[in-house]
Length: 348
View 1 (tube, helix red, strand yellow):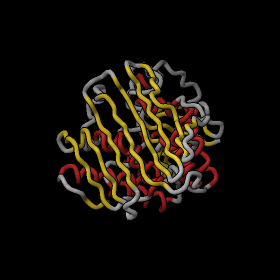
View 2 (spheres, one colour; view 1 turned 90 degrees about the horizontal axis):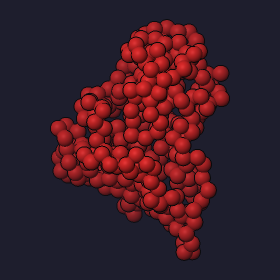
View 3 (cartoon, one colour; view 1 turned 60 degrees about the horizontal axis):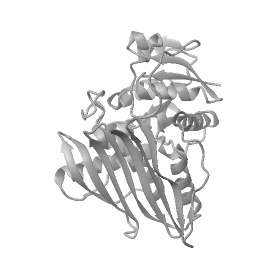
View 4 (cartoon, rainbow, N blue to C red; view 1 turned 180 degrees about the vertical axis):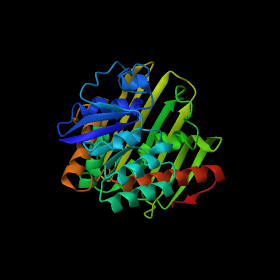
């Protein structure tokens, strides 16, 4: 069984810890946090914009370290699961590869493409796996869409519109710091950038309009240009100050013979499904496919199972690949340049 060490016990670290309980091929053998209360299992202060609240955790069977160096010195750890703020991803991953560990890094892979490239090179030099935890393709609605695109079930992918908006995460004081979290473009929209990359490949150019907050994007809409100009993809994402809707995401994805619809939000703390996954067929039918559980912990468990399988099999993961995550980051960087300059820019 794969022995995992989680580095960073914030919201994502907690979600990963809960999800590993449902993964048969991996277990959390250690955690690492600078916070003494968290090392003792008091996670009641952890807060996020989806999923369960923080609670008092029973950490029996998991060693607790204050410093990442201590966890990396633990010979029992096979995989280091990095759930630190994005600005610390590259440093932690490079340290883990130097220690001979495999790495699962929470998204984004890093805050700059140069760091992402260094992480990829270090993994290759160490003969270890670099996986980046982009969970969106494991959500049942997105998994259905990805399968439809990969199989050609509904014909050629023609494009789509994607939406991902949150209320301002006021509990994260560094959310808009480009050196720590990176703001909505890098921490939020990168989910959709990654999925667009999966469906359509790398865009040639992007044109982004919206609002900046300092050096980072705050709220924006992007038109993606692909070599095939018939493929039309747009995305809207960002932060709004009103707290009544903590989270929403949606898509309309078009194929030659079908259109897929989905729209979900958390309103006043309650999950609200405006449009369940729906297929509009070329023959005029409206279908609602049966899909898997939307419980967020189950979705993350599927993601972590895929990561464990990639490490144990030695085979690359088609959804968690580090190069794919680096492409998504490059797309986001190009979008920020476009927004700041007020014109279309090339990607890369």
